[in-house]
Amino acid sequence: MSATGGKNALLSLVLLLLVPACKPEKPVEIRKPEEPTVIIKPRNPVLTLEQRAELAIAPELIGKIELSAGAEAEPFFVIEVFPSENLKGEKGFEQQKLAGFSVRTKNSDELIRSYRAGLRVKGLLIFKSHRGYGSLPDIVSVVRGNNSYDILKIQRTEAASYNLDTSAIIAWLKEQQKISSFVITGAGPDWVEAKFIRQPETLNEFAARIYAFAPDVRGDGPQTAGKLAERIRKTNGFYLVWD
Image (tube, rainbow, N blue to C red; front, side, top):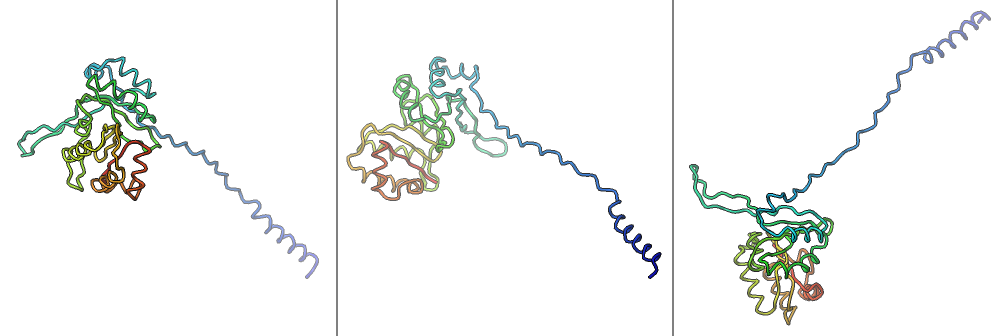
């Protein structure tokens, strides 16, 4: 190869290497920062002035309970069923009715204990209407009623899986009052909570009665009557639940 040919070959090689370098670069894409996810929690409904007037409960009393709970009062509704028949042959209809007020608190037991007796003489009942299971506040409600069994009627507590309606559950509770003394402190659609004034003499026997009447208690707690009896003794109360 001549000197001229060698120079030409070298020049061609250099040009080949420079061609890619001379290509226009792609524009750098600037990523926009991701928009933060905003979760808006719905605000709990507050008891209005009209609702407070409708309940006819002393404003000072509502205010004291709000202060003790550290939360504003909310309306508490019940479902009323009215027997009727329309043109379609449908019988009965349901309607919400304002029955009281509620507050959210993580000190539900203390709140109920502090106000129960004073409200009782005024014809009012205070009870836990919803459980927060520790992670969320419980809901404590105040309604009009004659005795603590009215709480189950208001909440329409039943155990459909065991063919137990509200009246059957109340009948069982009244039977247990013969061997002890207690008040209902909470109830929901499928659960009841109570505190003793006087405990049964034989707690193991009482625990066995609970397992027989509400077998699903085992799923939420102690698996033996002995352990359940110990929990009853320590908490001075008992709990019924049906899945």
